[in-house]
Image (cartoon, rainbow, N blue to C red; front, side):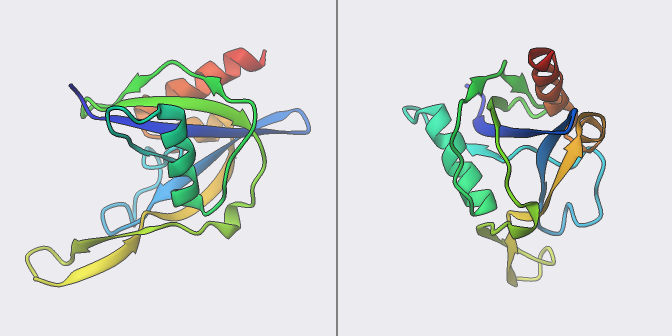
Length: 152
């Protein structure tokens, strides 16, 4: 069975424009990557764990802010790696400059024997739907498109 992640597609309507909240992964591999590197806040969950509860937990871990509201289940998407992402859209508004992410450790530089700590998320932002589609990992673009269809 492929790995599974659960995430939150947070959106807001500023005036008449739909805006999407995205996060940029931390760590050395994504440091200089932009288009196609951003994501919705998400993370893996285990069998038996309720996916929406996991999505809320991951949102808190990656942003430092809890999320609540009227969650809309979106159609799952599959990454090139085979991982399935279950996502929920919810309307809300958070300050993207107040992100507090948990950290992970990895050997860096490779084969150096030195462990370094990096934030899971190094920045976040609000983007109009067209820009969000450029910034997002290609498989996650369908989530924004589905939200746009619901918003009509």
